[in-house]
Image (tube, rainbow, N blue to C red):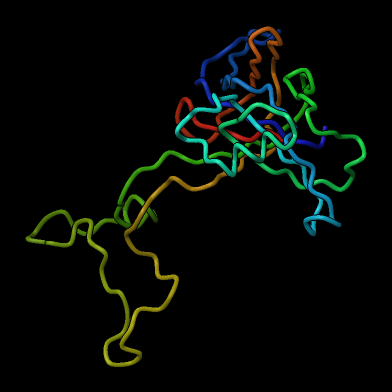
Length: 206
């Protein structure tokens, strides 16, 4: 399956395999997702499939009139999340087609993308693994930045300098996570290992 699917991270747990070994797994509530638009090279300049996830009311305050018109044009209910997946072959897909966990197989390897946990404003010791300064003898340089650049020449800080700043809340992709189990009744996907974000985080599985 080339097209991706959207879901929400439920949390992590552990299970036992046939040999009795403990495996750390992540449980994801996935789909169902519906194809809301097919973008072709002739119409949009590239080939892509647009997928909708989490159906919402047409009277929802988070739904704008242009977005509502986008769904009414193809006679589909409104969805909270939309995501595009670049495709090469569009012949096998049609608007309104539904994708669920049944499109995956146990043992298959997937790539999962999502926003990592935001950690706010962080210093260099935490953000870039800088070493700390002396802890004793009157040192006032424990977790400080240190020198940022030369003095008179060039008299500025070079771009790309590792400094304090916003940490986390970035798009992260974890590749080659193995599917351990699938629950078609509850639309659950159980993958080996950890995925980005907190519980409830929106993730893309491909």
